[in-house]
Length: 272
Image: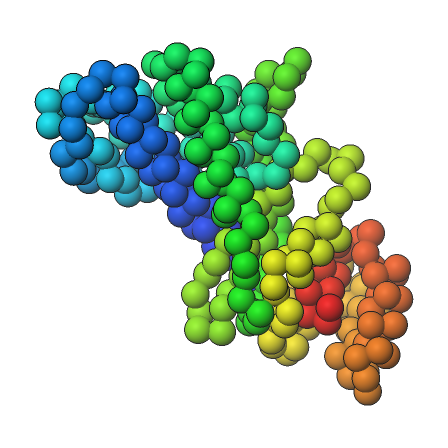
């Protein structure tokens, strides 16, 4: 799979998560509004919204008295400028309570008191935490690792572009699953090794297809490195025992890890 195709798949997966984040905020926003102003729920109506990652389908909550309307959706607007990017940060590691409250303030337009906003923040972070720590299937056909450029707010710096690390899994039946998001500064020591360690802790044990794994790995490296990398990978998947495979993999990490962390990361997941 080439990089353009991979990035399309990643953006589709991120778009689905943006929709999930925004739908959660909508539900909590209506609940908070009714608690403050009174009234009763009255179902939903569909709404399409354009985000940076593409169009998402939302179910906009209603109230019986027709007084509630989401603070961050203008009645006839079909474009959500940058809010989708900010919302994704709620699912990334390292989002503090205060920072999440700032993000919700942006989304909700300071509609509520500090106490109500704090309660909303707790609920959104709980949902985000559940997403980030949910158990994963033991087996995936492929795991793709990549980064997406994202606008986030940094105290003292304003809106800056950061890289969101993304792990995308392809199940044996072809279903795509976002395995996780990690918002990490460039100098972070966690990097891909920590990302892969977290996937292991959450239950991922096997990545299936060696042939496609080798083919993808060789497509990601410089032409002059392909023959040497192919030989090193053959020593890994052709090892006579798990112990030998792990020993050779350590050598591969030392040789290729700094230059091609995504490629090495795939094999670390495949041979844990």
